[in-house]
Image (tube, rainbow, N blue to C red; front, side, top):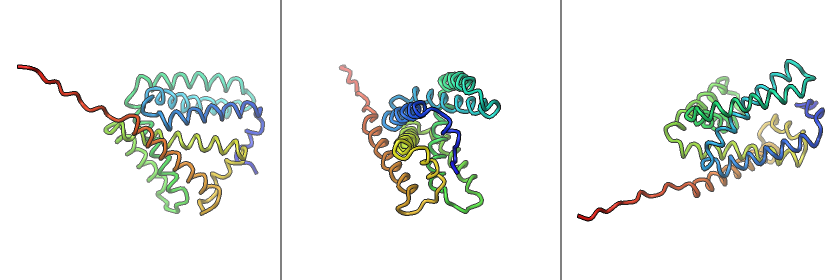
Length: 211
């Protein structure tokens, strides 16, 4: 049984195009996240608001794909504009999402009944710390988010829509999900290192005045 059977109802060229765009966006997040932070924040608002609006229309009117696409576009533009003007909230949101992704991945197979609260708590802490330590947290958060998008997009092209079922598997050594997480970690580390190397703070110039 497929986890997302609605994917099979979409044209293959459309799916491939969306995934290719997602990989490009993920690459931007991963390797240029802090350098293009305002763009990343706007894209985050577009993706979240557009996704929610589109899914809501699909849920209410399953056969109205054109309406869903328009709703996603309008919602995405509104979300992007909102975060563009609410810069600090955008920083918090990116930090929140990055921390949530990392914590959820670490605790994915945890039997702790409070796991969801731990994930939310770490995500909230990550968002708040991002406001205080913007550069460091933004680099790590955008690298983690971008790497996940890139790895999932490449996995989609390699194995098709069935790769989504891999995300439901337990993390076991040598199994598909463990390989996916390992690739994600390696790409995320590479992206973070690249960002730190290209966004070093310039030393302040000392102005010497002659008496």
